[in-house]
Structures are given as structure tokens and as C-alpha cells.
Image (cartoon, rainbow, N blue to C red; front, top):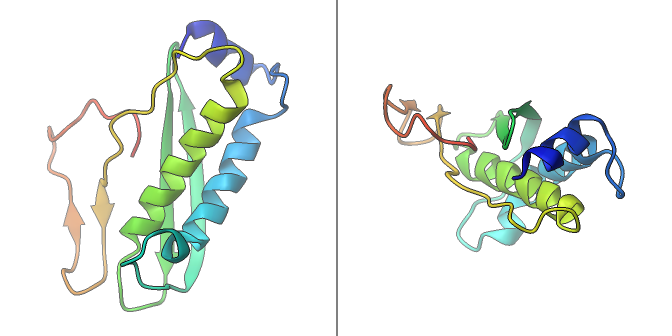
Length: 131
């Protein structure tokens, strides 16, 4: 995104209001609705969702984490959460910056489920803007 867009978001000076607060709520809601959006995803009891943002000069990094007590992993819930939060940022800022892109959505770590724990190796896609 343009540096002016990031600055407006940081200053809470956009026409549609508090972008990051709205994106956080959207991300939390999306994690809870993942099974209704993805046909092969299992409904999962979501216990906790966090959505965090790191602002840089010309991008915002979005990170989501999801916890559950179910026997399956919640990586799809986290990926839907981060993507929806990023889409919300785009939606709220598109009138000031149509050049924004959403790039490099990636899973960084998971635990639970049949496949057990998994962590992206150091150096694998280190330049991701979204995780």
C-alpha cells in the first residue's frame, strides 16, 4: 500500500473509521465461521482468536492465532481470519488507495490434529507479509 495509506491507518484518519479495530473484529468473526465458508473444513469449537497487526512504511503485516480444545488443528480458521482481516483493511481503504495488494498468506505454525505439530523452517518464505 502507499505510505500515505499506512500513515492514515496509523493516525486513525480514514473516512470509514478505525481500520485496525474493525479488521480485528472481522478476523475473529471469520475464524469462527471458517467451516461455513470452506466446504471441506470441519466445524471446530474455537476457544480463542487473536489478530495482531504490525505497521511498516508501505504495508501492514497481519498475524492470526486460533486455539481450540477439539482434536483437530485450526490452521484453516487462522488462514481465513488473517485473509478476512486483510480484506477488511482493503475494503476500508480502497477509496484512498486502489493499488493495495494482499500477498503471501502463509501458515507458520500449527499443533494438534492427526498430523501433529508443524513449524515453517527458518528461511522458508521469510518475506511473508501475512501469516
